[in-house]
Image (cartoon, rainbow, N blue to C red; front, side, top):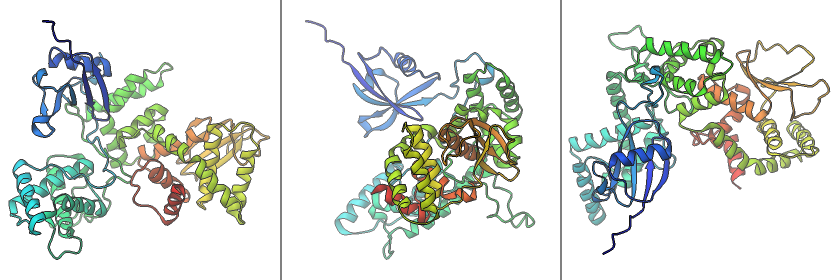
Length: 509
């Protein structure tokens, strides 16, 4: 009898920041062999264990100990080992930890977690009884505690300080999934749950504060009965401004202030080199991320001092990596994909506005006329036109943000420029949009930090630096920057000013 031919396997490999498909011609001989295959084919340079979604337990995660337990078509999750480390020979980087949070607050309805087995049984029976007789579940104190504790833990996994709206979303989702928990006589059916969750989140933050979690410990020591002279508990709270996920993480395991400071000094020396070791800089910047956030959030030094301490933030690729650490989002890929998607509709809206009368219409008409006169309409030309016209369309004053000077004259005074772009042009260039400038410099706190040849790249870097350095948006261009954040990048997109809401609605038409 002929031997059975090997059966191929299809795996979905779930990593902390992405999921990838992997096809195998046959089942590996062991779990260790599978781990080696995943490391090689997916280029993963860390030690890890494997969990798989077990069909015997409705897809719940189970440690993979026997390769024969794995279905032919399976979902496996990578679980980093406690001692996982880079295989790099650089001893300084033997314990590079990932950011603490791997997900932002989910869009749409809140994903209610799976509760403990006994809680799920009670809720299942309660839901069945509610559907049959419209009878609400009688909550015991312990049952409500278990539900709230799990909800608080899940919500904290997204952010330490959820907004009132986000807490309401969680309460509404809880009751929608488990209707037996609806509150009799309540207009919404979940207002009481909202208040309970809000209170529980405060208790959970205290619990995490006692455990030494930095992002809530930083707000300890406020006014209390024993410390009546301290500042009020609600004043100067240090929390994410704009959907940051890893706002103030703890130091990596095995690292302290002294060892991270040594790494910081090594980064400074490496950046000074003509031939920079960019992979080494990336790994050191990853390890020192918590120290950098402490510098920025807790000490709040001037920007020029920060850039002296962390000069790698002037490297474009490293700035984008910092944004990824903060928000778990690829800044250039998302920004350009969404901007390019909206380019045709934005140009249409600008032309409609330019056809009318008034200062805004005249300024837009001048930009669009110059755009139409260009011989080449490549993607960079279109991006520059839209980025120059957008704040005008939103009726914002661009005079303080967009500065120009000629390459044959002294650069203008930048003493009063908190955040802006300085475009250096040739002496004969009088166009309203500069498609081929000498350079465009990013200016923060009156210092020109880095320069780029195109407006799109310069704008993106100044946006990234505002996040990385925990700065405020320029007041005159608040709508433009919030358009970038909330509409293009989808970060806290539920809170829009009336002007931006109108623009968003127009873009969807």
